Image 1 (spheres, rainbow, N blue to C red):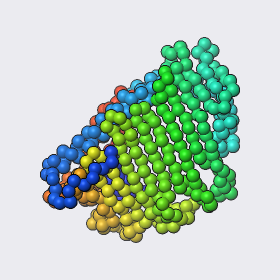
Image 2 (cartoon, rainbow, N blue to C red):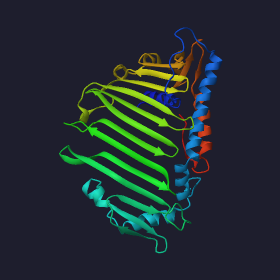
Image 3 (cartoon, rainbow, N blue to C red):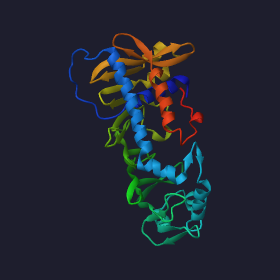
Image 4 (cartoon, rainbow, N blue to C red):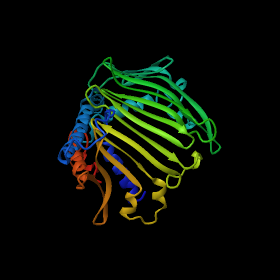
Length: 364
């Protein structure tokens, strides 16, 4: 991927940081109701709220349950030997290599009630129509207070390049700790009925207590797909994003990302800020050694506050690099790095106690 394409995705990532609840109805079709100074404050507030949502995830039941199980500190898994032994012992009651040998996961093959024995540090197994795994929440726990259950899994077989492959159609699984649901996943998917098995209608819902993420794929026509993602949380961290991708043809098996995408439309919203736009991928790919002006002619990223335009996102040359700038309604501009550099620094601080954030390269 060339530098500009990377920058485009960085631009989309910048926009993604501003994604949240569904946008309000327009308050007016007339002039602006905010000053540029107020617009800057609103954008900063959006980034600040995004950090609050990461804090919520970090302090939530699911994340803390995983951290306690691993005893993760500054990138080191304190319980590594204990966790590794637990997984190694699973080999004695289940054939984990069956998936690799058959290129397929089977609920019937792995169904059973698996229980960790604290004294012998081994697994016991009894019959069950589901996969039920009972285990302790941490090394010092003397009872199995966690239960992971796979209650449903169905797949469908397809032939790709003269090989049979199995793709998931439905999945339901959940994790309980002390009777409280920490995690669940609920997935359903249908595929193209002939030719390459492209997903044409799929929904995946994932609970990471206290946040629920939902991802959807919908084929609108043979050459247009809509992808969406949303985050739901009771504590003000709801999010929503959607994009439409228009393809040049429906030969899904031989799609070339450089040649077979016509355009990408997108829409993000958070609180009262909305960003939407389109990237003319086909025109961009037809430009040889494009200049910044040429590139900006293939994108249209509009920033709004309460559905009133406050600026555009465009690229600008800084030395030998192209940077993403926001051009405000008064014709002033500033590098979006002024927002996301601080954001990344604060993001690292949130997870510093668990991960070696000094090795986490978020610079762009």
